[in-house]
Length: 539
Image (cartoon, rainbow, N blue to C red; front, side, top):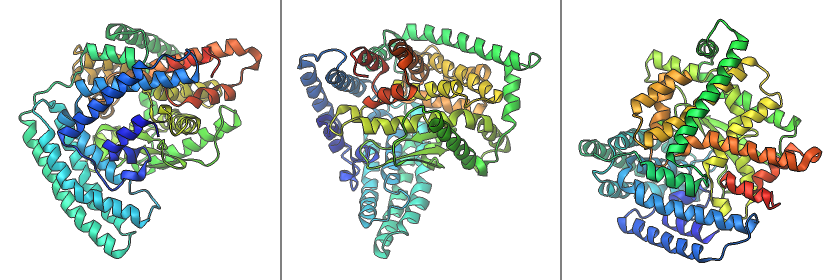
């Protein structure tokens, strides 16, 4: 592995496990303040070393490696200073614990060493929770504390139900040890949640990162010639153009009915909660068949995308679902498309809203984005196209990843997958939603837009139900989210620019399959770097 990745994984065995490196599967890692300080110092040293190296020739593969390493180190060092999740984000600990346990409980993995690793992590969990409580300060934002309490509550069914169920596949003595350790871990997780209740009364931190940090991310992480003010203006322009396209399309379908009412009517056609998985699975298979039939890109042998439910500890911030891609350092090419189930404790009105959000047309419009030829396939190509020892294997930017998802929606419509006018209407409504993300993203983190106003804006302008709008905006306030929501549509447009330039260069010899295969063969770097790579003849 790359030396920087070795450093990260040695410090953080949970991250290593999630990324597919099993060497630290029996540890949770050191979360004493000194451990974070040591990592930050080592990172600064590596950054100084990387910046002292003479620059490689622009547009070459060596140049891309160098640029991505510097991007990763500069961004991570800055985030150490600004975000400090280990001191300010209680949900960070709860989610990491959920990841630490769930990553070891994969279907079909009944190896005793996996059970032993799970047992070791469960036994470390009480001390981990105690140290987490000591680390968290009154500078934690109240909103992050609330997220932490919700995530901690979500640990209870994981530890109390999923862990014993998995233990039952192990030898009897080991299963008994796991069950006993799970009881102590459950008590510790409850204690962590109770401590957050006390912290909630003292927490006074600010979750907004500020315009200066947004400027930094746009310049250094995304490699864009934009600042927060320019991004806000770009967002407003995108909203206007996406709204105009949506209104024109809806008027052509039914001049007497607004697009809001047309979308509302489409959402009445929805599956029951028990059928959510089958609904998305059907559309995933359709999208895969279309990808193959139209030669959109290469589907490598042995790739697999499975459907499953979002783990309970993650559901608070994921109103619809999430893609769980094939880990970069794990064997195999297996991803997961995870759907958020209906909340058994929700009111009838909330359950209806959730069903409408998962309507059949939405499932059709999003399945390709997430699976074929979307995120799943992009991550598979990322893994196959990068050397294990390259920083490109580890690094991933939402500008490429999420931008690819939106680009895929355009590609699927272009090649006939979205022949149903209802799906094309919904795609345009989703385009407006993604444009609004830019406005909300920059507005929230520069302090010009409040959470309630952002939620109302999503409902009014994008026609989103309250449940989905609230979940979306809540996620935007996280420490790791500034500029992420903007990356979808910015990345999409940049990818179209790269494709247009390549079509003009190649002329009649242009091939979608060849272009997409080449585009995805360098991992997931910022698209402006790929554009320079194309200019250097390396794409």
